[in-house]
Image (cartoon, rainbow, N blue to C red; front, side, top):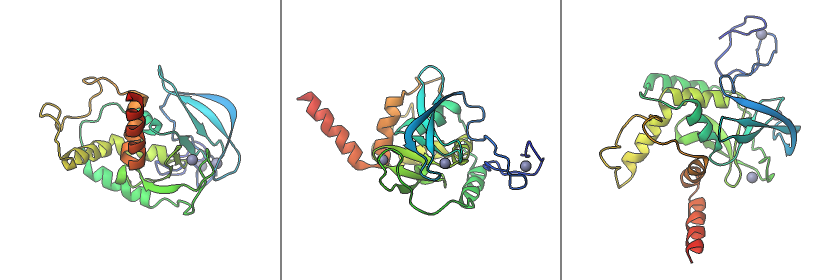
Length: 227
Ligand SMILES: [Zn+2]
Ligand SMILES: [Zn+2]
Ligand SMILES: [Zn+2]
């Protein structure tokens, strides 16, 4: 990849040219979105300027918050996975070499290693390795969602394209005590064959995977509703 301005060589996840300083919009390249240009009352945890809101997708739109300066983005629970799966719906194969290379690239990021505050509740967020093995370290508030620094969405999209999420899901199903029925076992992810999951499904999935207390909360609320 080359800088549009000066032609200098760029890494796939570089949001700013190291030679001329020009910013590159790489995270949302190829993704359908509309800039709502509204300044929200949330602040960028890195730049301390108001975040803008943008709508992503077609049909079922989701709204995320983004910083114009650093291109960081805030996703509520389930929204990131929704964007990843809808941007790259079909992944058939696992390219292990590419996954390893992406992990190495992510590890080489000069990520600012300090805790930042959740834009929604201002509590300090934790770090998590997204889906335990992507190598992309994101900031996580268990109530409000994930903060991605500029360039990290692109890394996760590349990781999904290389089969990283497919590999993760296969590992999950082989760890679980009840294997899926034979007809669905180890089938490639193919959105044309199964109905698309809606945002609510991803929200639940995020809670289940990231935080057991979220799951317990869901169960309790379901029990309460039943009575
Ligand atoms: Zn440049
Ligand atoms: Zn920022
Ligand atoms: Zn929060």
